[in-house]
Image (cartoon, rainbow, N blue to C red):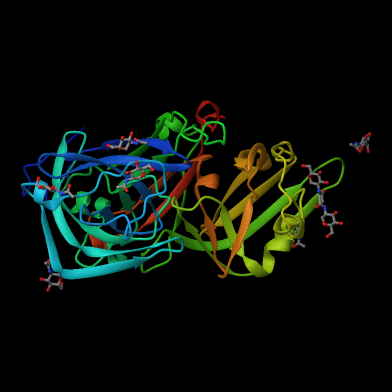
Length: 378
Ligand SMILES: *[C@@H]1O[C@H](CO)[C@@H](O)[C@H](O)[C@H]1NC(C)=O
Ligand SMILES: *[C@@H]1O[C@H](CO)[C@@H](O)[C@H](O)[C@H]1NC(C)=O
Ligand SMILES: *[C@@H]1O[C@H](CO)[C@@H](O)[C@H](O)[C@H]1NC(C)=O
Ligand SMILES: *[C@@H]1O[C@H](CO)[C@@H](O)[C@H](O)[C@H]1NC(C)=O
Ligand SMILES: *[C@@H]1O[C@H](CO)[C@@H](O)[C@H](O)[C@H]1NC(C)=O
Ligand SMILES: *[C@@H]1O[C@H](CO)[C@@H](O)[C@H](O)[C@H]1NC(C)=O
Ligand SMILES: *[C@@H]1O[C@H](CO)[C@@H](O)[C@H](O)[C@H]1NC(C)=O
Ligand SMILES: *[C@@H]1O[C@H](CO)[C@@H](O)[C@H](O)[C@H]1NC(C)=O
């Protein structure tokens, strides 16, 4: 911990600024962090999600009908009556529609605590949720408050507002644990760092940054190129992207999602066809080799950066069994690409706001390859 010197605000705040490290654990393919909420403090496991902005907790009044839980993990619900510092506002209802689920509930606020740092946090107390297989008590949304649940401030923007962040950035090392059919909840060593970033520990080389589209809502940057190069045998086959779109960095997604119209072309440089995969063919993990690689060129023209992963870095076992790996690309109905956890696990990622002041945000995202000892390992 060190005291931040922030012009104009340091003198107003007695609290010292902070770097907060949250351990990432793996529950049946989902990655979660822990945040204490309430007085007395109650521990909650939350799915950290850069694709959304709201911190929400399943409310203690939610029934098993309205909030079914088939995850195999118990959920610790939020009980406002059991907290001396909590409040719920039935006058401020809201809902969130995710691509994988839907929740609704009311505004709440309470004291949150991570490490030894306590602060007031607004969130949503959820009384209806379709996330039935979520092995967590809720979400920790990390995108912009501008798209969050009514009257809530995203967890990280709240830390910045309260001068509880040394630097206006957070950093992500997802960890080397790999969820498999044989061991769906492996030990993990990931760290989500608020108020700083730990590339000196985890990264090999520099973090290469690109700017985001404005206005900032989610972590979205222009796509300049998607190239797949396959150098198997003496043949080289290249696929070059031919449409324009953006790339959204979403820790809450697993796979890489690409536009439906291009998915067969994209697969043409991989060892598989998409027709085969959509008819039930399951890729062998042994075909995820270093013979082929995927390069993404992101950012605005003139300031773009290229990030490359090899086939072996995209191998995620557990596609019915551990001999077979999940198809590296899926499609969705958008011209944009989503890069999710299967891609991000190969990098140290930095989400840098450039300023503590929302008026002066200059949000960038950066990635650096991991040191070999930190790469995912089954
Ligand atoms: C969640 O699921 C677990 C395992 O099936 C079960 O023991 C638990 O009672 C459920 N919890 C809630 C809050 O529904
Ligand atoms: C869930 O909680 C119930 C009741 O408290 C307990 O019996 C059960 O072992 C717990 N299940 C898991 C998976 O932790
Ligand atoms: C919530 O907390 C209150 C006060 O401690 C308690 O009476 C009540 O049973 C709790 N509700 C649930 C659903 O756990
Ligand atoms: C919610 O936000 C609205 C509009 O900014 C404000 O008028 C209202 O007082 C807020 N409600 C609560 C409970 O914070
Ligand atoms: C690749 O080409 C070289 C020379 O052209 C040849 O010696 C070698 O056997 C080839 N390898 C394969 C796998 O075809
Ligand atoms: C694809 O990109 C590669 C590398 O930038 C380039 O050499 C090649 O000419 C491109 N091919 C097409 C068909 O655009
Ligand atoms: C791509 O590489 C795989 C091996 O990883 C090979 O089996 C396949 O034939 C190659 N495809 C093309 C089009 O070169
Ligand atoms: C893949 O698809 C082709 C053409 O549709 C078919 O001939 C082939 O048998 C399929 N291969 C597998 C492994 O499914």
